Length: 323
Image (cartoon, rainbow, N blue to C red; front, side, top):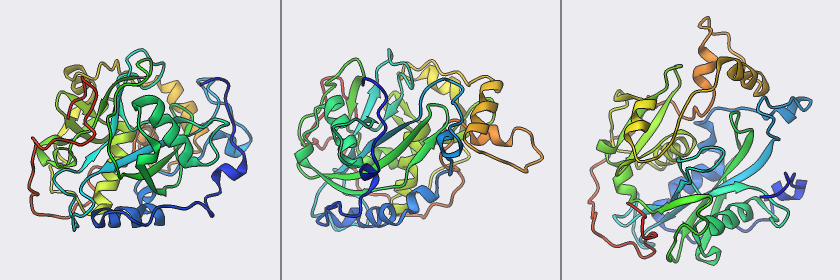
């Protein structure tokens, strides 16, 4: 990615950006939530260290602005409110050789660069580099507020989009991407595929099974917030809490997850300006790292959607892609 790039103020100004208004009705509740900022209201508010005198990050990593593409595909004529049987979301399985978040399942995305005029340009460029996605096939619908991740020192903008003309995607840059996935949204929302993971230090958050892979952390939190606000959730057992390390070891993610040392967490807590009056001294640590969404947030009951696991996706995945 080259040297760290700090985007100019114009990069963040979306007042004149033309978001697509012609999108499927089943996406309407999610678009409204994203444009109003409701998505980020479900996620913890943190500030980057540069927001208060340039406090250095304990890892030595400079603060970066980044964007991820939250890209849904599906029947444009489906009436909603539930997503159609062919609805899917674009994800990547990060290469095991990466220096951070190796082996994780994530939205395509990455840090801003000088060629990016606006936030959505970063998400589209990164998705093209990682998956071969054709940017012209995508309609940008909204950009949520940024979410600061203390562990990596990134401020991340989720960019909501609709895949108007799905095409073939693949692991275009295998140094970054091991596999490209387009799992059916119905599979992800299946209560049998949803659970909560808990780390030994106390942090916990939502998770999804995708075959033999596990989606957790930042991406799972954003996806869980999105599906809840869209009204797509089915009632699932948030009390099904599984040990994070054991879950990852049994998965095909290839992650070597270890929680940062307590001294590092203390520095990260201070850098993120987290404060707590909780008498429990570990309160902040349970909210730190990749904490995203309380797993006990209420979820509306909905009828089980019709599912068609054999329905072909017009775009497909790479030869190793799984759904």
